[in-house]
Image (cartoon, rainbow, N blue to C red):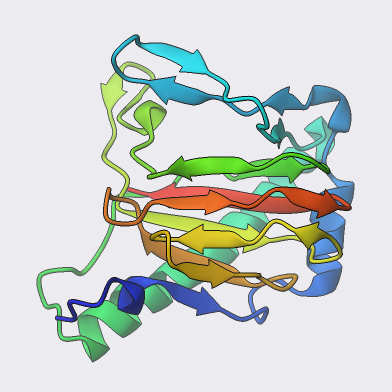
Length: 198
């Protein structure tokens, strides 16, 4: 097992999501439903904003089934690559062989001037679904839907900078050892989609 945190941050190329498919996903978003991204504050049990937050976007109603199914199929392949083919087989982690599921795609739209503060993905709403325990996030997934913007670099562990190209996916552990942030967008709009494995 590696002790260097960067070893468990993996970037997958665009063989899972082509540029054309990413453009289709962006065109399938209903911007009339956009809502400001919020963070859950555990001590107050409230949702809060921090000032330069991006917007959460949603698929158009008629696109929910076909687009989300395609995304989930592709993410399943990437999760398999990370957990089964890399951690289990290559890294010999025989105790780590599967997962319970992963969340519905969440789409995030960063317009000029927005950013994401440093945080870890201890996502509160993942713990319970429909009143039943579901799981704790173990891996975070971010797929870049475009790259025609300036700024917006992903900073991992306060040291490692990533500028994902269209269709690339980054995956990393969701725990407190992997804080991450998005630098302020200085030009254009940044679109990404995220999910959490539990």
